[in-house]
Structure formats: C-alpha cells, structure tokens
Length: 342
Image 1 (cartoon, rainbow, N blue to C red):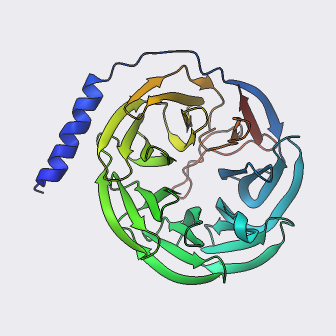
Image 2 (image 1 turned 120 degrees about the vertical axis):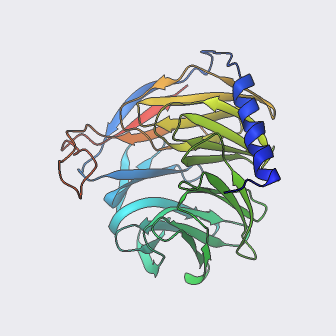
Image 3 (image 1 turned 90 degrees about the horizontal axis):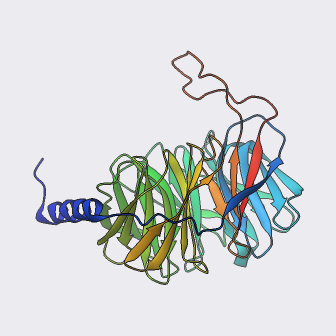
C-alpha cells in the first residue's frame, strides 16, 4: 500500500510529538476514590451516562439500566426490557432517552421523567455507543457489527438514514456545531460527519495511537481527546485533524471525558487506573498522578456540576475455556459503582 503525502505527514508529525513529549508528572489533580456503591445483578456492563441537570446517573448492566441520584447516590429506578445494553443518550429538550440493545439490534426510547418505555426502534447490527445531536435533534447509534451509524429523528422516533463509516465504530461525540466524531477501532482512524447532510466529510489517522476506543471533546478549543488501547492519548484538532499532542495513559482504556470547568481530561482504564491530564493551554498538557480504581473499571461518566467521576466494575473469576466465550466470569453479587471525587 502506498502512503499519500498527507498520511505520511500526519504519521511523521505524531511520531515527533511522541518522541519530544517529556511528561511533567504532578500529583495535583486532588482526585481520590471516595466510595463504592453496590448494585444488584450479575450481567456484564458497559457505558455510564450522567445527566448533570436532572441529577441522574444511567448505568448499563446487561438486561437493565440502573438510574441513580447523583446527589444521594441512591437507586431511584430501573429501566428494564432491554437486552445486552451498551449505551444511553439523552435528548433533554425532548424529555427522551435512548438505549442501545446490542443483542437484538434495536434502540429503546424512554421518558426521562418517568423512565417508562416509549418505543423500540430498529438499528444496524450490534449497536453500541449512542449520542444525541441537539443541533439536528437526531440520535446516532454506532453499529459495531456492520460498520455504520443508524440515524433517528428524535422528534418522530423514525429511522431517517444509515451512514456507512468504513470501519468498526467505537465511541462518538458531537461538537454542538453540526458535527459528529466517531472512532474506528479497527482502522486507527477518527471520522467527522456532518449531522445535517448525514455524510462523512473527513477521515483522520490516530497514529501513533492504535485501536482508538475512548473519545472526548473540548468544544471551546476544538480539541479531540482519543484514548487508544496501546496506552496513548492522541489529541487532534477537531477542525482539521491536525495532531496536537500524544500522552501516556493506562492500559485498556474504554472511556474518556473532559471537564471544561477544570480543564481536565479523564481516561478510565481496565487495568484499574483513572488517568488524569491537565490542559494547561490548547497546546500544552500535563500528566497528573493517576487514581487507583479497580480492575475492570474501564468505562465512566463525568458529572460536570460536581466534578465527580463514576465508574462501574465487578470482581472477576477465570476466563471460560470455550471458543464462544472470551470474557472472565463475573463473581455474583460484586457489581459496584466507584465514585471518584476531589
């Protein structure tokens, strides 16, 4: 395969950034693991979503979505009737939430005020991450098994299109200006879509980051924070994909968040660490001391009002020695939410 001049320049630029980076290690983030919140159920878990306005935390957990109060840490409801659930998106302006059902390839719509189911919408195969674009009032579900995103009109709950992405999508974020960004885990790329025309308009390399999974955005400074599975955080300009910096993070990252009021980037890692990086300026970043969490706590949600970070995990047994199973078994009764605070 012949590299284009643009791709070669991108790879060289990222390599130079990685070589020249010398982290100024600091322990000034002030974050610590405060408490654990036990929840029932023994199934696998995935994304968490915080509603800082309504003070709710949505926790996906196999065949249920737990809803916690962010202030009291108490369970206030369960959304049931879901199947192998992965992500939750919130359309606050429409009083609607959306849940991806990975097993049956559908999206469940529910009312935010009552948690009651409104309807079920067909999607592509294996919907995973999901996000809402308030500019177009559209929901975008990332279909991991067929490399596409299903687009839903949130006002009518009708599917209005399917966009081929050219690879296996992982997480996605919007910029509030009519653009959607999606990581393609198997291609080492991040793509930019126009949410109005529903077309891919840019494809950018994440090199030297391999297997990009986590994604967050600084909307004020137009920066993308891309957590990659080779323990690198790649920072790109959201306007043109220009490489800005590369920093080290923990192993098996799966989620990222940006606290704009603190200029902090969070990456949750399956190795039992929470990486925290300070944005000193749009061109300068400082690694702080990671917070020790627990093994398997690879997804998280940030409550932007309090600054608290929530992660889900459980205790694990051995990996079953069968071809169809590659995940370790969850030890019954050990599922918890970890609360990390300043």
